Length: 258
View 1 (tube, rainbow, N blue to C red):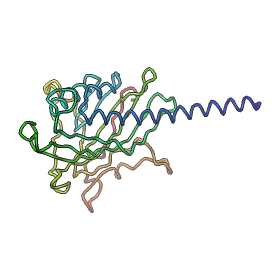
View 2 (view 1 turned 30 degrees about the horizontal axis):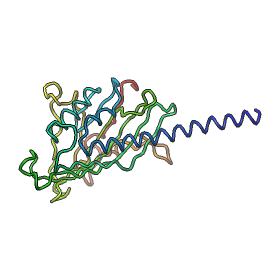
View 3 (view 1 turned 90 degrees about the horizontal axis):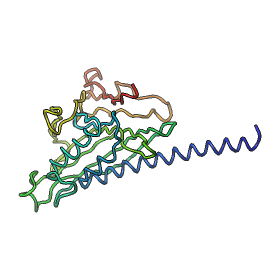
């Protein structure tokens, strides 16, 4: 191989690496922008971040919303109706911040698909001045959650493909997480169309604090290359065998990967 041919090969490899690094940052920015829109109840803008694909979905509180119609049903239907009386945008005196942090993004070799793990530490509630006019009254709470998401590039633009959010814990501001009652926010239990804003299907073995099972990692261990063992993803009671735990969580896959 001539020196020029070797240089061409190096340049091509560098181009691939730059493309992958650029795509990783674009996916990370996409998730951060999702969080900023969500903070201000801009649910129309949130839904427009998703890919119009048969396998698109959102998993939330034990329910799976399928397709772009399902995405809109969750954000523009359920969330907008619950938090801001159906409008697109914030209302006075209502806080709903969703910082998107600790992002780990991996892009595939073709730079057409990606996976990302993010954490959110939500602070939410109402101001004392609106306690008599907002349907939630006077309330303030914390929420911690993990995202294990998938992204897809369509027509050169990165979009959210499959958003899987696992609310890991909830707590009132006054008492903290030690006194959170089990199933603090009830899991979704009625599917669409029986519930006009319900999910298309229910997920197996949903999780809420004090359940401490691990949300599976889309990536392998960076040194050993191994996945975490199923038993180690479980959370039995102290001193008990893993077999006594609720089954380990499993990340759903799109049909195109089955």
